[in-house]
Length: 296
Image (spheres, rainbow, N blue to C red):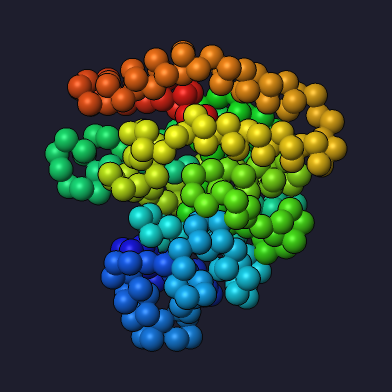
C-alpha cells in the first residue's frame, strides 16, 4: 500500500487529491492511511464505511467518487504502482481529446516485483486489440473484449471525466469483488468514446492474494461469476434498448461457451494442473491460449 501511495506522490502532475477509502481493513492499512492523511491534510483524505464495514470494491469506489472534487477521476488499487508520468500524460490526452470520456493504455502484468530470478522474465502485456492512440467509438471496445483475449481497462490504468458517472451511473454494488470493474467499464464502452493509448502507465502486481492470481487458482467461481456478469450485461442491453446487431451476436456466442459445462471443467482442470507442473514459459502460453479464453 505504501508503495502505491508513494507512486502518487512521485507524479510529475502536481494538481491532485488522494482519497484513501478503507473497506473495513483488518491489517495495518488503516494506520498507514491515517498517517498519510494526518501528514498531508491538504492532499490526502481518509474515508471509510459506516462502522468500518467491509462493503466491497464497488461501494468503496463509489464512496471515493462521492467525495471527489476534481474534474477527472482515477483509481489506484493498493497492490498496483503508477509510473510517474501517468497523470500528466492522461490529463493532456483528455484536454486534447474533448470527446473522450475515458483514457487507458498498456498494463504491465508485474511478476518481477518479487526480485526472484524465476520471476524476472514473467512480466508481460496483453494485446490492446485496437490501433493505439485512437478514439474508439461505442460499442466497439466491448465487442472486441467479448470476442477475444484483448486487454481490458483496469481501474488503476484509467482516467475518467467526472461527468461520466452522471451519464452512465456508478459502480454496481451487487458486484462486490470480481467483475465490478467489467460491469462499470461495459456501461462506458456501450455509450461513450474512449481513447486508447500506446503508453504504459501502471505496474499491475501479481501475487498469491491478488485477484488475477485467485482467478487462476479457481478460488473464486469464475465461470459462474462471469455468467453473472453476462446475465447482467444482457439485461442492461435490454434496459438500454440496445439494437446493435453485432453486440447481440457476440453476446450469444459468449453465452454458448457456458452451455458446455463438461468442456469448461476439463479446461479448468488443464489450466490448474498446468500452472502447477509445467515450466514457466509453458505456463504463460497456457494462460494466454486457454486461461484467458476460459475466464472471459
